[in-house]
Amino acid sequence: MKRLTVCTILCVGLVVLAAPRFAEAKGAICEHVQGDQFTVDGMGDDWESFKPTIYGSGRDARVDLHCAYDDQNLYFLLKIADERLLRTKKAKARAEDRITVELGVAKGKPVRVTFLPGSLRAKAKRVSVPSYVSLEDSLQDRGFSVEIAIPLRKFAGWSASVPYLSGKVLFHDADLPSDGKAQSV
Image 1: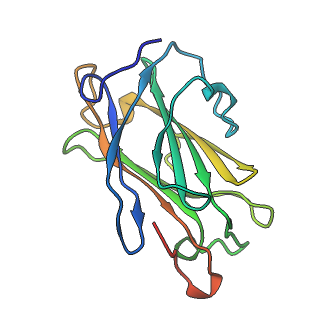
Image 2: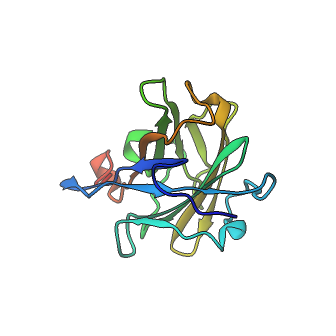
């Protein structure tokens, strides 16, 4: 397994907005792996040897992003620290905790994924997840984790010579149900 530099193979721009202003955005370096290394099950046990890129700090709204790719797919593990996972059976996306991933090649149409993680009170809800995207989430001691696999061929303009993907991964953290919206992104 080899580590890749930010601009030689693949990097993912990740933006985290902490109310009331943006946190500094930084890219994530994805490692090249052999096929069949990951089982997309939301658990993250097959990611232990991968160093994450960390956004935020503390026990609330922290995102640890792990990234890898093989010849066929781009893989992510997002470990989300969340003191209060807010989900309801009504699944009102704007008022609940949710993840949005938007990635693409240069000016090509990006792949967009939006979902609400499962909780003790509500099942996971796929708001906008293309059928070709594999996605599973699981509750963790202090938040939740999400594993995602996206076929590289689904990125408009993708080829082996593309140096990076650009985009964003957003965690919308809703802690006050009475607000009807996320308090931080």
